[in-house]
Length: 231
Image (tube, rainbow, N blue to C red):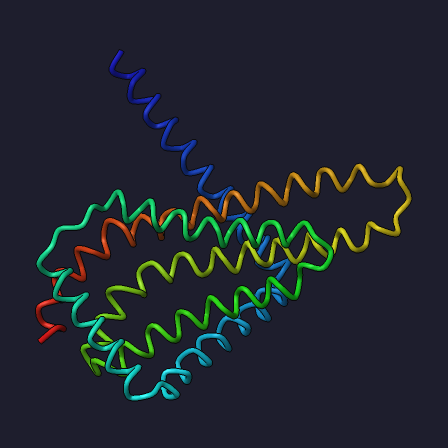
């Protein structure tokens, strides 16, 4: 009986290893096939980050003071009050699913490609403006806060958003090409749509890890450094 359990456990671990390798191969093949699209979407995101960071310099003194007071108040509140991680997870899930859903919808439209680039750029703008203002207001402490509060989730969620955008661009281009295709050849579009949905679902599941980090780990990290940063 013990030998059977050991073999079963070994078989389970072996099967899990195979699944991880299969998932790794799927993602690697997807990224290699769409290398150029990933590059241009990444450039779009970086452009948004740079624009957002430079926009901080255009704020008036009154706007800077208001945002700075809000930031310090937030840090003091965060350091003294307990937050419900479940509520944070729900809020983050709703916020990110809205953007993921919008990217998915744009992917099933022929005219969605420029809007996908625009959304990724806007997401970069928000990231750049937030991190840029925090660093501008707090200096080196702001870099520490940005590293603890933004980086852990962004390093997971942003690649997933870009992956969903690439997937949407590919399917949107496929739709445009199939408009001129004869009816007997269109069943191939159904399998392409299924693949589109599955890949989008895969990236969404991966993004969930970033949302969980933001809800359950980031608050702990911020609470640890809040007293030092808010000084």
